[in-house]
Image 1: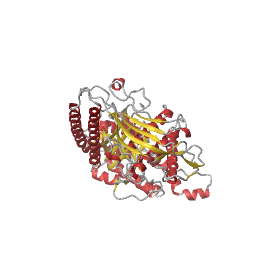
Image 2: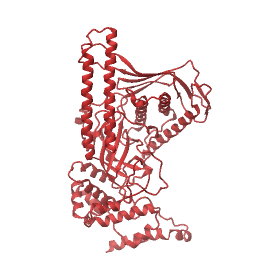
Image 3: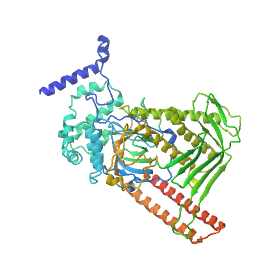
Image 4: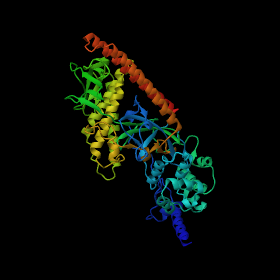
Length: 601
């Protein structure tokens, strides 16, 4: 009784301050009114506090980055924390069970943007463990896992939960965690006091707190899941919020663990996540820091030559930034050594596509205070391209500054302006390639590999390498793995400078955060949806078929190639093998596109 009286007195004092704040402030200028955060007004910290303000690593530059060879993440083995072990870098997708983490808000809408943000709050680790452990219990329906999460988010005492919720809690939480919930959960006050306090809060915040109150009350009875869902998940469209951002669907974010991610929520309970693990891609530059080659996997190579007979484009008030005309841009492929053919020599490198005397690109450090005026028709849209360069430079500096802010321990070294030059040159070269191909009406997807996509992958690699060079142990690190597992992972050579991610991809460490603040924030799990499993099987079948076609194709090429071919015969064999590789690449892209389309529909 004394405890109840003491708590009630505290609540009454706080509520009185909230209700008479304006009057009190006028009469007693020295009194400071407590600030109302986005958390519960009756508790200092909320179970989950992640908000749009925490989503600070979005990357507009990659908005049209569509990895052509994306694979199902479900094909990879599970790690010790129920994530996925990355055996090879590259692009992956996963259609997984997701969870509502913000009662009283609207369900995701089609075409609405979601961004990566870390999971934060007093119960973030507990809920993360619930998601992780739920993978071990595939027979627990997703609805029961969601109900337990709502109970935790609503700060419900386990002693007040019904027997069904308690049964789920005993499977997914330890005795210590359940005891922690009991001691830190919410003590209800009267509806009158609650209503008077809420009256001083913004309407959207009122809906959240009222939804949590209704959920707490429902947890003790035999309320159906449909009724809980009706309380927690609003239908229709939310009203615009003052903190909303304009973010397109599928925008990439950088996860400080060392990879890139984007989200496509189907609804609050199903979300497709795409990730990109930076590969072993190398960029070569000349003495003027111009990009002259981008190489991937020792076989695909984009080669660039510049027309140095044409004077470069200069920009007023820019000391070092120059525009350079492109003389030759070509896609090359080094044919692998086929063991099942009689000829044992080097098949060499073939040109898969080539464009001459078209386009131009900026190179050099950008100061951003000048004006570009072209006196040569080789430099089309010079003013527009300079404006794009300034915008991209601003976005890049903002992104790096936000990553610095993620380091609460202030151990992350500050990014110097000179360190962004290479990243900006790749961004500008990507723009140059887009304009070059568009001017000639060329479909990027029709080639053996997309040069723009390769440039974007190279940018992702150099960006992640730059962050890692500053990061050390300051930011989030990938889940550590036992040595017994590490020795069985056939990743790229650890001695190469691109080996900055090795571990488990586990989305339950993060959240998909809506750009519209009135929508659900989503907790991600590694429990696959039924669609993911069907899609994984179809993707495997598709890739098996394309692999069989590939083997048949190069066997036919090898049959017609003698062990000592003439130059003509060797060139014909090169064309034959190149066609096999090109067709195989095309089929794999089609498999990837079909899988992604199926997963998102």
